[in-house]
Image 1 (cartoon, rainbow, N blue to C red):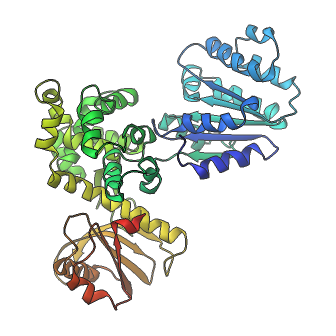
Image 2 (spheres, one colour):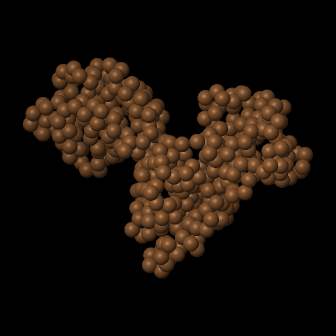
Image 3 (cartoon, one colour):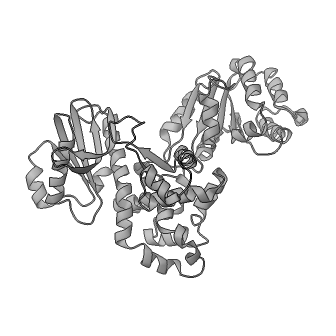
Length: 466
């Protein structure tokens, strides 16, 4: 079953129907569903699509595999089997009349780029002299973030400026992920998302005929489960010195959120740590934040693990992998380590990101009273109360501010928490302030009584998020 990706499919269809040469760069982290999206698109245009996946073998081997797929569509005959270089392919396309739309999908094209230094310059030459005049839709797809960014952003690279469109495929939002769990309550669907994040493959593993506990035991805690070794596998695929990267994420998981506290826990050279942190940021595993409204180069920087399943793995599995390898049953381990309190605390931080997504959507669709110039977490000094303050989500322009508190607890949002929210307004300079209370279990009657007639306050319960 294909879930979501309507906007992405609409883009592919519009490029397919444009009637002119198109070159789309499709990229995104591993497991995000790039190949699955392209396969679904290709099924709708089967007779017009050449779908080829590059590998790390020789140019000749890749060319022969490509020609095998090309021949299925163009039915050009056995002479294609004699091709051994990409220039042979380009010459063939130059001399071939292409009446119907032809889609050329090159998946994992970074393998071709890495193994053949001349691949990108050869393709650039082919685009400029041959392909631009053809009824061709070329899709280059890859997962290696640094290589993709180099190709599309470096003006010195041959393919710079050749793309007609670019699509970075992102993990599903919590709303999109909801489609994987029609039989779960909103609460359970949100907990599943908090554990798995928006990676389609991970979401597809959880069966909503079984409880969250049963799915976690089967897929995450059991040594035979796909997700038990997934993080180790991903890190080996993407990185060298995986031990060092894991130490950084362990430090962040243990509460180190500034560069200096991470450095103290990892205990290594500052330049090396900074370099490796940036790699993890580019891969989408951790994120760097500055207080909402401050410049990106602010020294007031915090780091956190932003990928939900990475966070879950380092919070609950990594340190006890040996134990889970035969020293304790997954069922007993769940009872001991994944208590309701611990899971609520873990999901609480993920809940803030969900609420931020919800608020961004309101602004995007023009459903707020102003358009936000800045939106995110804020922390700093409260000038009135003379203490450090945190605001879960702050959205501002020059005159307006929305101050949000996010509570993922089994208890409703209470009067003390309301007072804390009101006190945080002292940190915000904008004259027009409003407040949103995001609460898993609503608000107490006392809070409701205080705010129900005040238009500055809104309450968003868990079910309202959907």
